[in-house]
Length: 108
Image 1 (tube, one colour):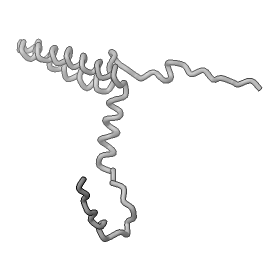
Image 2: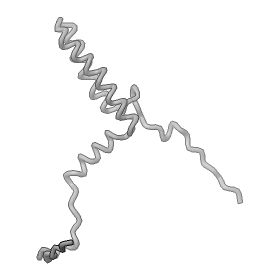
Image 3: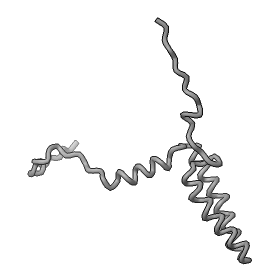
Image 4: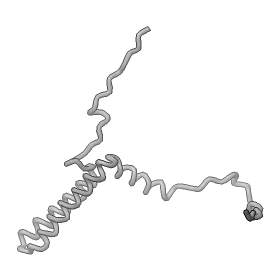
C-alpha cells in the first residue's frame, strides 16, 4: 500500500507580515506616526515632523526585530491579556475548607 502525501504550501502556513513586521502592530505604529509627521510638516512644526519620522523608523526596526524572533508575538500577547482576567488557579477540590497542615522544616 502506497502512502499518499498531501502537499502543504508555504502560502498557507507563512505568517502574515506587513513590511516585515506583524500587521496589526505595524499599522498601529504607522498611522499615528504619519499623522504626527504630516501635521507637523504642514503646520511648519518641524520638531513634530522629525519626531514622527524618528518614531516610525525606530519603531519599525523594533517591530521587524520582534517579528524575526517570533512572527506571532502580538497574537500571543493579546491571548495572554485575555486569559489573565479569566484564569483561576488549580484547587484540589471546591469543598476543602481547612488549610493544609504546616510541614516541619528540616535543617540540613
